[in-house]
Image (cartoon, rainbow, N blue to C red):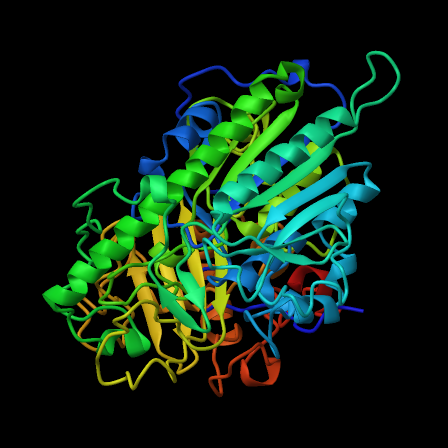
Length: 594
């Protein structure tokens, strides 16, 4: 049975291409895959709410030294939903949030109880890895709603060893509650939670290294270790979000550090869409607070950087294992601090919230390389499967990322690589963190700011577009080559937009916006004859009638707090050739939609 929400997300822009060109700049040799023995190991480090656009990685020398300099940075990596629990579930299942039906951090639409009730405790990464012969370990935050009341109802499946953080103390840096394997909870007052995660990660690494075959020269049993510190998430207790808390040894670092003064930071004129464009400009008191908030985030990441350094050094002491290990660093979602006049937070479709760090080193991966092909969290499980030699599942919404040098070479001119699009979605109210939620005509307290939307990021050969449809049926369209900070909404009917009827990349806006999209390999679904492989192909005048008059558009009939398909307009695309008797039935192509 398909999960609730197995219908496609339709987006009203660009049929989305499979011919995007990634760019690599190799400054060192690829890690030698010939030295690897047996299935590869994985160490997966995931931070909480870490920005990419605001430069946080620049303050992490260990991440740069041990992973980025020795591996490849994916600078256009995106979460597909910008909020913690749904993003982590999508990452662990390879499925978009509308297909997991976990769309919030708490019930009835999300949290660990929702993850379990939807059946994902039997169908996610550690279960699949154990079936493939892996030892699996995890320490730190699993997901919201995994608490002192729910940790054993049921216990998470698929793990050889665990030491989880538990709600309600997950986000209390010096008073975290942890729960080891099948033991009961314990609260560790006075100990810094990132240091606890680092210590446990090294324990698990030692355990994994010791669990080797008894036969001489036989490869050791492969392992996966997930490490999930909460930095740089806000300190959170009883629903109140305050500044992150750095380790005491780091609390005086970076004096005077401020939020980068990008063009979209507290702009003179309002920007964005929906309730965001109603926000008042922040006064100096608020700006000073946000600078402190940002500085505390960077300080809190220093312990995370030490965690990375400790793991890397331990691996370096076992060079044969290191040669067969992929070390990955990412975050569940991005974060904004003052951009578009917003209070600290996430959930929005802006680049700060959805473009997240992703760096990887390991066998066959180029050292010091950068890759600009768009990728997403739903691609991570398929990528690990491909690296481990595990058959891909048809139900995945993602596809393997070209992380190795060999895969990147195959994504060159004339090939059909990973899609050039990422679908982003969100349901529910925006979250305004810190002491100053902001003021404006749409704000009364910090509730009622519905942030439900569907969005598309499209990066291809010569174009870079962001398109959002709010549940109010308001639209945003940005040309990020000309406007990388999303200050000028160029959707034709946007009030006050500049050049609202001007072409984009030489294409008429109405025809560009009409190009529809589905979740995975869209052109193969929309054009099953195989003659369309890119947005440029789809913009051919021969397809104007199909997209402008026959293709359904994104729409909402009501703003809801979770994924409820009956309020979300068209759920199935038209297929080119159907109306003309091309023989491509909707039923026969159903698997392409999910």
